[in-house]
Length: 398
Image 1 (cartoon, rainbow, N blue to C red):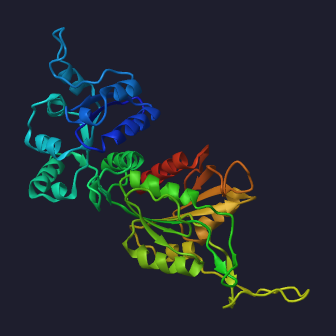
Image 2 (image 1 turned 135 degrees about the vertical axis):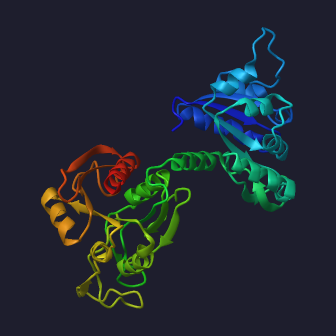
């Protein structure tokens, strides 16, 4: 979201200032144009030359350094689309909260109408001080986005809250929260299932499928970006998007129970998991040993149909979405599933293609709804595809 954006990075005095150099590189990799301003205290930890080299722009440290009559702090304040204060010391937080402008960095912040993101880093005693608590509350009232410090090993030599989160985590959280502020699904509760279920044969072996869970996790991120409160029921552990709640399950029966527990509170349910159609009737309590040359016979029984269960219990305000992973007759099977499962939308994909489907980083789908023309979303990265799917869902529930 920061591609071609003008971003001003304010670096204040903290031992965590070194992380802001890496954060600068992350912004540049996203295609942002970044200018840096540093407080005098920040210069004690990292040289302005570091930021000038990485950003390829001069670093503004002294409000009076211009000798040509220009007013650089005002020009920079008006230039910025976003201002990141990272790390944000207790000192600069107090200045922002109280409108103090006594150095270059605080003057730029006061003069700018840009969206501001503040990432505090300090000792836990300073973070918990009533003055800092009041100042943080004031920043939030002023519409400034706060990235809370993390628990971790502090410079003082002990574990506590106050550590600056890792730059990647700060960037991800900032993007998610900024997008969510005006997202098309703001205020909606969305339940998503992801991954292939595992049906135990014995304590060592199980029946499953090739699903990686990538599409379900991508949908969870896209839903969170759109402003929804997201609960993800998954069989695999992958990187969990910011603000998404995870419920870990293994079998189809565990997933069904989790869905039934969560479904009544949801506005939208997306069944993206690849649920095993069958399970072992009597899983062995101990590992099954190979005996001679005898074959092994496993007796299977059908698993519950989670999508059909949700479709049959939905109320008037709920929107149910299912996936159809097919190898042939895509449109026919998807249309049948739409009716049979009482779904509002079926997203069909051809898993026989090596370029898309299970375990691939890309996918292409066709979206089916009752009495509507099918919509095809072309082959693309699964995260981009997930955003496209969320757009179609948002359009359908308006």
